[in-house]
Amino acid sequence: MHVEAGLRSYDRAMPEGHNRVMVDHVSDLLCAATEDNVANLRAESLDRGRIELTGNTVVEVVRRQLPDRAVRAALLAAHGLRPDGYVLATVHRPENTDTAEALGAVLAELDRIARAGTPVLFPMHPRTRAAVERFGLAGLLERLAVTEPVGYGDFLGLANHAALLVSDSGGVQEECSVLGRPLLVVRRSTERPEAVEAGFAALVQPGEELGGLARAWLSDTPERLARLAAAPSPYGDGLASARVAALTAALAGRGAEPVVPLAA
Image (cartoon, rainbow, N blue to C red):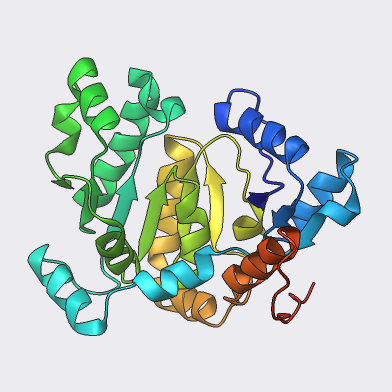
């Protein structure tokens, strides 16, 4: 069985995209997070009887792993940050780190944001750190608050209070919708268009497009955060794990308590 089945970027340069197609076609049970994922699977002529709409487990994971208010306050204080007053950025994908042009374009825009007065917290991936050294881009980090990579709970705590997220991560595209935070996705394609369609995220290219939209979104932070706080996550209702567990038990022939279907 495949949890999170049906993700498709249609970008053949993404190795994980090939793996997702292969796993979907050999699995007996396909647990699709969204209706778009279901449609992707049906477009590949996969049997509808193998496909179940479950929602995404990310919703309950974020809710359970988000640190409590006191821990989050201490975390922000440790980094010298105030709620809704900083940018949290991560960069690690090859398309943004394999060339000096791409990585330099991303870092230059983060530097410009910091120079304009908005702190930029940048937990740096080892791949990115090596690329910065290889391409001689360390000067673009001087105004950024660069840290070592942070644990998942700490990252959620920091993301929960960021005025803006900038990332090329796939998971952050889901997590931002649970936290109600805006995200600029620095990628040429995404397998998670639901976050974009729901207004939580926008797909941008490194350089001027990233910088221009970042400045525009930061200029209306209170209004944007209020809108997103009222918007439901497109990834489900927080019961995906229960649905997946029940479907797994049924597949194994053990039976299970029924769970509420996910509304389409």
